[in-house]
Image (cartoon, rainbow, N blue to C red; front, side, top):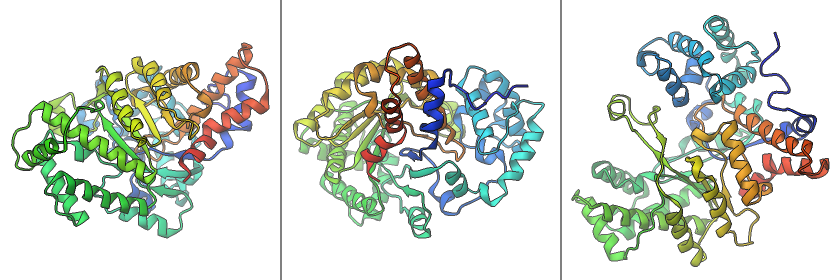
Length: 466
């Protein structure tokens, strides 16, 4: 039987194959946003089995399992690791035309060298083969990173994190750079006052600064940011439902924060003012450090409250939001640009109907100082599949400069997810190759190869300057 994930997978013409095999496939990976565990990298662990490395924490797969009628006990419950893997194997054939089908077989092919289709009949053979390989030294976390030719990894870290594991990795001499990313979402999370105050207490403790006012809150954050900078951090990241850009005064923010610290009920207006102030000041801090700021916008989280209370957040009950975002986004960035405080920025949308909004918004705030200073990031979450990537690149091509795009990232918790970079590179090369075959762009391999290489690697390398 013909191998499904063969050498020409997703490459439909000769130009695409030349671009991929001679140029794109050989380049290192810069994974500038992910959720890998620094501890697992520091300890260079070997996972016990495929369920540990492949299914734990993967809410993409969990959603498909639930949709296929699999009981929660075989997803996040007490079923054995083999039972959970077998449930996934039985589900895979039902994921045809879902990106999970592609990702599953790409991840079996590389690094495991398995070309068989996963299903109930092949499950035991594939389980045994993969589990045997996972025990070998060349399948430890660091070895998997090196196999994938990863040059830089940027994890996602709270400002209160000790970054202990990053230091261990750095001191070990591991050649792949593993750098922290500043993710200050909890300092915006003023909706739950109990958790918010617990967080302020932790921030106060690790910074050594008593937080009693908005000024001291910012002082504590700046001290932690200095520490992150010392540990190699060059990026921040924010996960937001929308941009906050309400008008406020310093006195108002101090009053709101004091009310919050006393656990007095806040109005929606007060919450929005506080979030507007802190988000703006975090952006100012990024500019002062010369960091790149990232904004992930448009998710509605934890829609199923029963399951949220049962198994917690990030378990597969989030969806695309449909809020209007353009006006607030423009106002937020205009404030920064008007004060010459707009740092390098990457925007990610979750709602595909916002594609052209984002593609045009980034053009409003390019200032000629850095090529591609304001970026529209690759298809995120529900959009990081073939259709989503192609639509993002087509919109960016039509309304901006795809040639300056910093390319793909994994946004993943799995050490097997580096095949997403291969997936992206194949899709990019095919997109360009199809245009060549149609006579829409010239068949100039010097021009085309530079174009592809820049998007796959060099743009990110120059932009982040790790």
